[in-house]
Image 1 (cartoon, rainbow over the protein chains, first blue to last red):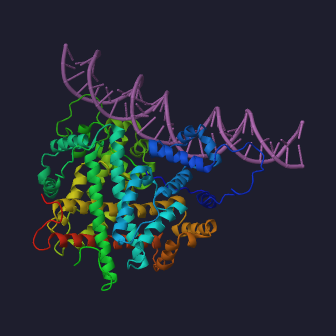
Image 2 (cartoon, helix red, strand yellow):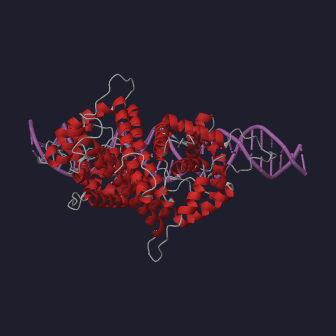
Image 3 (tube, rainbow over the protein chains, first blue to last red):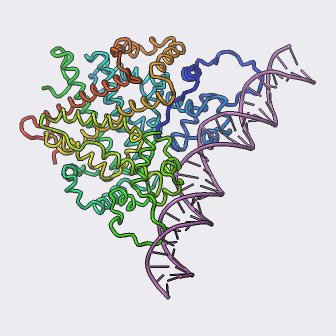
Length: 279
Length: 279
DNA sequence: CGTGATATCTTTACGCTGTAAAGAGATGCG
DNA sequence: CGCATCTCTTTACAGCGTAAAGATATCACG
């Protein structure tokens, strides 16, 4: 279930995102002093989402975190969707904003992708916020600025840069989503991935004894590609699939970077040199 | 909010997916004759999800669709999550299962990606089912078999084929997700995308007048890349962004296919040597 | 042909959700 | 002081998934 962005008063949303609410003017209004503020509430929301997951993020839960009732939050934030937008934009601030491009764009993109990957695993709930209509807040634009700066001047026309960024984001988000869901599913259900898979594949062979006949290509692929050597000795909770997911991430990223290379070459055929894999 | 797969009795799940429930034996048990069956319920669930979206898919809604109470479904299906798994696996059956590879793998992959893209836009709720632990049903494996058959024998080692498939799926799903959410958001809120964007960008400039200073690369990119000529005359509801989304999809796909090309070349360079990690 | 076991299906109920509405209590200005 | 105004709480409502209990229909068996 995707969480859609708020549909409320657009001007108020923007003001909250960019903090242009009249924070300067001294308070002279009657009434009790505010015991909270938007930043505190957003921070509490992020803490709850990090700790308990998006499914358990409720106005009541954030209220409990702050020692208030759920309805107290509505004094500062118009709705839960708006709160999520604010959380999303604010949490992006912890990403690095600059990458060394002296060694070429390729290692810079890899570093960036690694950081984004780790970020999503740290805050898996971010992956559940709808991307349809971006939040248009400072965090979002800072993140975009960072990656545009890496890819600027490598010899792609602006439209192509946008497309490349799309592909990169979709890929990183998609792969991180799978890894994050695995990470969540394990502890949440008390069933490790190895257990889950071994139980399931046994049952699969039981339910579909003709599997190899019905799906010959898949069967051949699995028998040929399955044994990615399991590294023993690491004390992580789920070392095997974590490692597997990260390795798939790296290989896929390389594939995309090769595609970018090809695009660069075909655009500026002749002058620029490729960073790897020459024709 | 992602819908996770069922955690119930794994054997029963598999039996439901592969229809190995004792459907053969004649019914001689006492009690009233069943008025429903799993297939009917799954079809109703798909109809509700297609028509009203995943957010409005509830046991009560499916019950109403069938003229029963919500609890009647629990006679046939152990939980809502299980029902969603069954819906997911069943709806995949409408995808084509074979592609002409006579003209090379590349056009075949493009056709496949186009079909999957259209499929996701037809059933956007499928994009909201967790991919962490695949359903392992016949639909899922049929789909996988289809794409493996396209990529088999183009000169990639099995592990690489798996990675390539991962990248393709993540990309298609990611891009389709954005397009689907746009498609949903428009009608649902009564605000077209052009309206939404023009309102938002006006407010953005108001809230962040120093935008071009704070985000110079993004500002430059947008001024340089924005004008993707709007095609007029088409009578669709949201022709511009639909077209834009599809165009981004095609360009991104090309990028990935170029990356695959590079991987094929580097693998079969010389004779048949794998690029990394030989067995 | 009862009669009891069993199956389908409905009704009710519980704790959860986002948030509208109303009220309590504190605060500063006239 | 009185009163308008603000923060925050309480209560309430319609929705959710599903546990539990009960009504009703159907078969096998004495």
